[in-house]
Image (cartoon, rainbow, N blue to C red; front, side, top):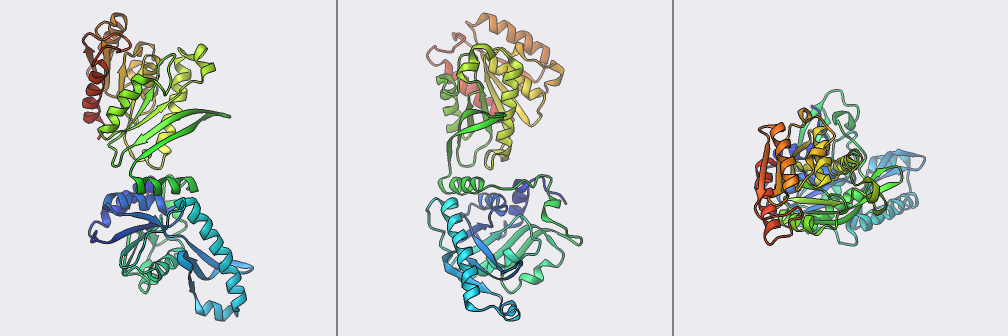
Length: 420
């Protein structure tokens, strides 16, 4: 069995945990790799999410051999056999413990931004990691959860070695894994994507789980020493994410796009409003569709890798030349589910129409006759997957009363049908 990524593993693991009593349940991810998995479990079970920060204590000079572990709240767990065998005195134990506790404090500040850990007293703790290799960290985490007051500890992992449960019977009340391997090499072998997880990702997942909504201004890398600005919003339980591509002379601050994005957000969609061009580039790149498409591709790739947005189906919403870029990107990226165009110059797309297979909604004002005719020709060339909707009495900029509300309403109806 291979998992696409930690999101996929978490979603599958969550299904295997549906039998748990949701009363007094807390999901605890082991930083860093276990947190994206735990986020999916917590979301599915509608349970609080936190991290369980644990550090193994290694013998000086042989750090791979652990003689115990330390956890939050000053919890210290010792392996008496190893301590005795290695003849470790209290001074050595304290020195190593203090070093690891300093790292725990650092991570606590970074991950929780000063927030206190969730209280485990009287709770069922579901300890989640992205897989077990030696199992030493997971075992220490289960012990720490018990010491912190959890009345029941469940250890849940997507992948583990064969017969792994035997090593955890004494520290857990229940053990769940999706797959056990007789020939266990490394956890990463069972994932198509096993990229390292950053502290920022852990922090973002915890913050989103706590506040239930993402609202962030970010810089997205689009090339060597180049980045574009974006405003990202996502409600709790978002149905999908809509990436906006502006037209010439515009930006992420376009009032027309912001109004439509607000309506989409109210209806449960995440939105990404981004600058495809800098102010300097706008004067000579506004009609460079290949360049715009290249930038939009980078933004779409960033969305796919985002710890929260990456789990959602993606649509593109393009205005004017941004619509041409959206069609061009979608023709080469079948992760894009559909495209919405508002007053779009879709005729400028630099891709053969046969390569564009996604559903597309063309919204054009009845007074915008030149663009309307171009959109009609484009739609006829595409056939069945194209829908042309004319907003009566609207001009190219949709400045007329009620015009943008009609745009938002039509876009919502279309997205509801295609972003599932």
